Image (tube, rainbow, N blue to C red; front, top):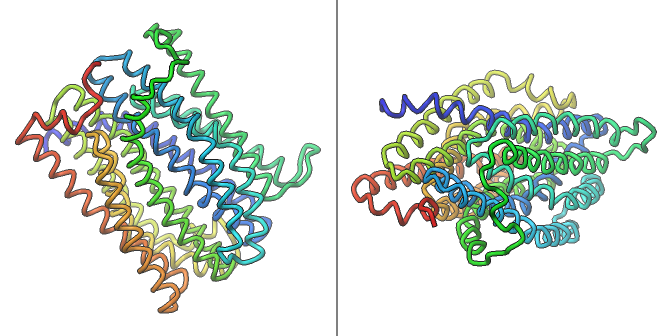
Length: 460
C-alpha cells in the first residue's frame, strides 16, 4: 500500500495531460451535439447515433494501434530507443493499411441503415453525417498512431495542447458550417461532420510535427529507421497484440451503439435523451480512460525494467485514482442530474427522460472506471485477450439481452436499456480487477512468467 501511495503523484503527473486530452477529445463530440441541438431533437439524435455507429467501426482501427502502448513503453523501459522508432513506423503502416477496410465497413453500415428501423427524421440526417465523417478515417488513424507513440515515451503535454486547440478549430468550423456564416451555406448536421474532419487533419499534422521537433531537438535517431520498409512479421505482431484490444474496445463502444440503435426505434425523444446522458457519462469516463493510458505506460515501463513491484504499484495507483474520481462523479450525477441535462437541451420531454438516465449512469460510474483502468494496466503487461473476452461476454451476451428485455419486453423503454448497460459494466469491472490481481500474484510467485506476459520489453 505504501508503494501505491508513492506512485500516486508520479501517475498523476503523467496522467493529467492525458486526461485533459481525453476530455478534449470528448468535448469535440459534446460541442457538436450542443451546436446541432439548436436545430431540433432529431439533429441531436442523428449526430449522436452517427458518431456511435462510425466509432463502432473506427474504434477497431484505433484499437489495433493500442499494441503500441505495450511495445513502445516496454522498449522504452528497456532503454531501446531504436525499437521505439521501429514500432512507430509499424504503427503508421498499420494505420494506412486499416483505413480502406474501415471506410468500407462504414459505407456498408450506411447502406444497411434502413434495415435498423430508425425513425425517418433521424435516419434522414444520420446517413449524410456518417458518410462525410468516414472520409476523415486516415487522419484519425494516423493521429492515433502518433499519440500512442508519444504517450508511451511519456511525451504527453503536446497531446493535450493539440486536443485543446482542435476543440477551438472544431467549434469555429461548426459555427461556420452548421449555421452558414462567413459566406458559407448552412449545412446543418453535415456541416458538423465536415468540421470533425477538419479537426482530425489538424490533430494528425500537429502530432507529426511534435515528433519531428522532438527528433530535431534531441537527435534520438528517429531517421535511422527505414520508414518506407514494411516488416510484415512486426506488423503481424502488432496486429496480434492490438486485435484483441481493438475487439474489446469495439465490443464496449458497439454495445452503446446497439443501445442507441434500439433507442432510435422508440422515438426521437428517447434517442435524444440517450445521447445527452451518454455525453455526460462519456465526459466522466474520459478521466479513468486517461488514467488507463498512463497506467499502461507506467506498467509497461516497469515490465521493460523487469520490476514486478513497480508494475503492481503503478496498476494499484491508477485503480485507486479512478475509483476516487468516479465516486465523486456518481455523487454529482445523483445530485445535479437536472441542471446537467439542461446544458444540452431545454426540451421538457428530453430533460425528463435524460434526468432518469443520468441517475442510472451514476450507478455504474465505479464499475465503468474500474473496468477501463484495469484494462489499461493489463495492456501494460501485454494481456489484451482477457479484456476482449470479458467485454464480449459481459456486454453482448449478458448486458444487451437484459437491455432488450428491460426496454421492450418489460416496457421500460430507454431506461430499461440503460439498466442492462449498468449490469454489464459492473460484471466486467469486477472480473477484470480479479484478473489483474491474479496476474500480479503469478508474477510475484514466478518472475520468469514476465517474459510470456511482456513480449515487447527486451531489446531485439
